[in-house]
Length: 137
Image (tube, rainbow, N blue to C red):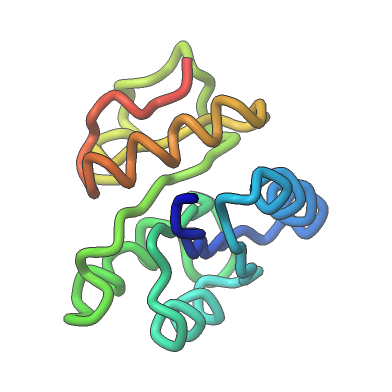
């Protein structure tokens, strides 16, 4: 049996986080921690060193790209892969200004289907923090 991977979900939408946590943990492959602010997410990441961070792009006070920048400056966390999650663009808009803004990292558009999310997580963990085709289509 494969090792359970630690996922940190940073998103200000509480209901969305609840459902994503349920979906991922029911698979038996993931343990999910949740933060509803970028600041809390950085603290949890430092404490728990997740295997992957799912990060919402638009959040109050500290945006997803700002959180990602802070993670990259942290020696302990800079190698943790990030999968951006956004409702700002649709799957058809992949490659737009937003992709440049988030450094070409993997992202998935909301709403997301469970199997697509798990596939993106697997691809992002396999390829690391670069765009390797993990974008859900």
